[in-house]
Amino acid sequence: ASQPWPTNYQRIPGLPALKNNNAIFVQKLIVKFCPDSMSPSLRGARDNVRQYILIHEDGWASDECGEWVDMAPTKNKDDCARQAREAGFPGFAFGHDERFGECWGETIFVTQAYFNKIVLDPQNPAPACGKTSGCPPNCAWDFTPYVNSYVINPSSMGKQKADTSNR
Image (cartoon, rainbow, N blue to C red; front, side, top):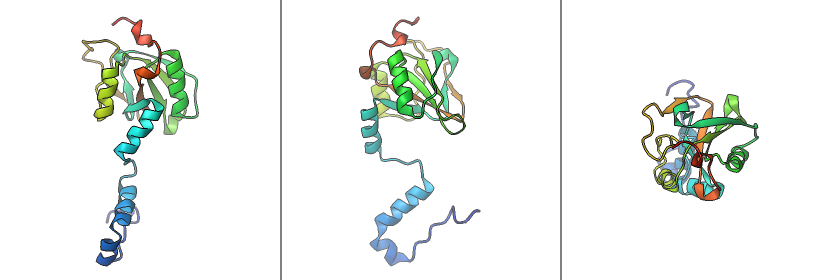
């Protein structure tokens, strides 16, 4: 095993132990080697309650995708989502690690169809640019290692700031 070996090694005390306790060892191995894994049904249930979903890790939409605004620092994503929802921002970014608690509202245009598409296929969707069609080619994800981006379910909020912006 590579170094440090305790991090990259899981002892299984023989084939009988593995055969008779398969689920225990599967769980241990998944937790150890895939710490970010989560049950899709659990993630869906959690997102349904919160009415927002993660759309991009370690980055945010570039300035060409839509206006963004600094919001008050918060202690968690739910408070950031609440601030964004109350201010009419259908997207928000929340800081983690070195930027934990920083919160930005994003004036992007999120339709129910776009939100539903992300729910069904959450793997790295294109940024919502704030226009109903014809997103600029330079609207892309900007890498920043301490910020994740989210969109709010449009059915859980009133009028979006993007409704009044130039689309």
